[in-house]
Image (cartoon, one colour):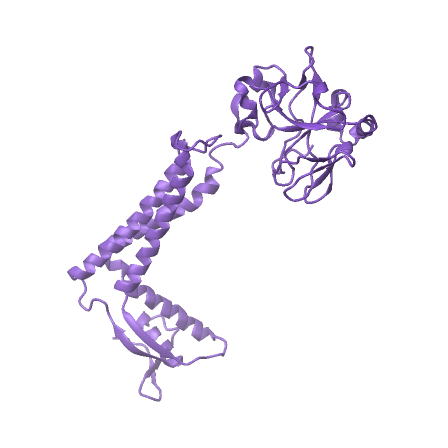
Length: 379
């Protein structure tokens, strides 16, 4: 029996001080109901006699769903950090890597299904049935009302009776642990492997197929899509073609080097001179005598806005357009962006002609290709 002070109020209901630390959750709840003019018109426990076989069956079902949630979430974490990774080139059914993304989606979905169904079953089958009626109130909450709300939440927590259901309590811990790990594994997983660590100590963000490291240390020639080498005379004045790195086995034209295509342009004499005069505006393009070869210039075909192929060349205006978001680059001014959302120039590839008369890349791009990223060098 409570020993705290009570006050008789109209209607015969005992009023109590909700800030009294000796009150039980039920007593605080009753006081809150009285003050808010709430009437519980129906209250029926699901299992009036605790510990029955029917209640235990429901508990086991909830625990099973929570265990499913935890195990599926842990499976998500294991798959995410496993060597499966993502393949460089997609071929359905060729390797186990093809199932990496589907397995991530399946395990995370199964985990969320488990926790959702556990909550539904617990609420429908274990919590008491209750119907309450309350008049609408528009006044702001007083400190006492907030204390009443806290007590009400405490009572609701006690109604869950998790303390006397150790099976569900343990399963809930496993489910929460698994979901917590699944939520953390993605940002933490980014720290498990350095994204700038590539083969042969190359940085994949700063390395393309034009790097001699992929060609046994020799300069990389330009090839067409059918892997035939390109000569200067293959391009008419004012014309342009897309070229790829000529790597062993023809892999330079595959998705493995999807960041390497360049647009090779044969400029008219006056346009080429304008570009040569402008190279100093972007010093990296003017290094080692300039990245051009005669009237030829090569720019990365990967738009610096969102990575689309910037390949619509307007010969009369010397503008290169990206069809995705309408960015435009001025070819005769180091591919400077002059319209649209792109904010970076298209990287220029330093080119030359070898002893056999074929065009080649004198070195890899001096800056990273494609869209900007926060770690990109500023030069």
